[in-house]
View (cartoon, rainbow, N blue to C red):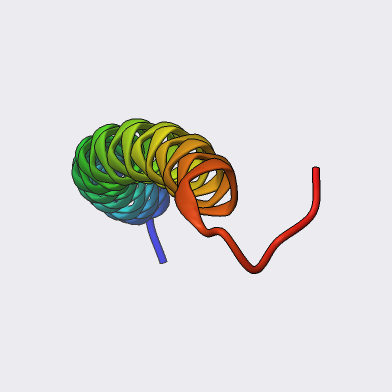
Amino acid sequence: MSTWIWILIAVAAVVVLALVYFSARRAQVRRVEEKRGEARELRQQSEAQARKAQERSAAADEMAERARADQQEAQLIGQRANEVDPDVEN
């Protein structure tokens, strides 16, 4: 074989290797972007879930406070009932 054929084969091999490298690189960049998008969605879901949990916690705290107030009121009414009831000794 003549020298120019060997040079042509070497150039073709370099071009093929370059194409393989750049296509693999592009695929890697695409996978990284997909993972970033997935992570972004997961963060948004996490933030929404955290907000919902915080709202529920605040509602539970408010209900517990109301329950304590109702319990105190019931105790006061019970004390008043004991004061009014002639059968209960003070």
